Each structure stands twice: as C-alpha cells, then as structure tokens.
Image (cartoon, rainbow, N blue to C red; front, side, top):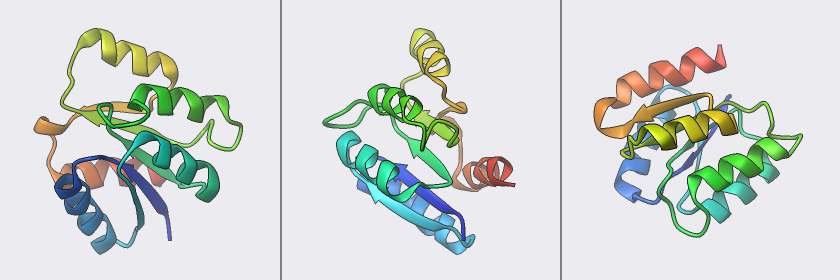
Length: 121
C-alpha cells in the first residue's frame, strides 16, 4: 500500500483528500503544520507528499527545502498545492525541487488523485 503524507492546516481540505485517497487504496498520514509534517516525512518515508505552502510553524517552502537536503527524502515526489499562485513563488518551489505546483482552487479531488497515481506508477 502506497503511503501519502498530506501537510495541510485546513482540516476540511485535508479530510476530503484523505477520504478520497483512502477510498483509492492509499494509506494517508495527515500533518497540520510544517514542523510536524517534516518530522513525519523523515520518520515514515512516504511515497509521495502533498504540501501546502501557507502552513504554520515551517512554511511549505522551508519544508520542501529541508526534504530535498535529506538523502532519505531527496527523491520523494512532492506536489505543492496552494492558492498562492504568484509566479515568483512557483519558480522558487520548482527551483527547490517540487515535483509539481497545483492551484487548489483549480483542481478537483478526482483530478488530484489522478495526478498522484501518475507519480506513483
């Protein structure tokens, strides 16, 4: 069973995605802030990380940077999904090693599941 870590502080969004991904046969772990998310990523080695940028304690960009510096998570696919659609921020997370940048308001749960599956197959 593939393991997906969702780092998202909006609990309703996290639950919607977790429910959908569980129904598709994925194991889902939730973290509601960047510090917790980073700790979980380093201790559980998820197959993919879904990461919001605007989260408490450590920003999504900082979490991504630290994930890419650690040999255990360097190659883990990290999908950034945020409503922050600033071109500079998008370029920054791409430079940090994000696998993809998705705008929350423009992607449905079924489409997100398809994206996740495409990176895990």
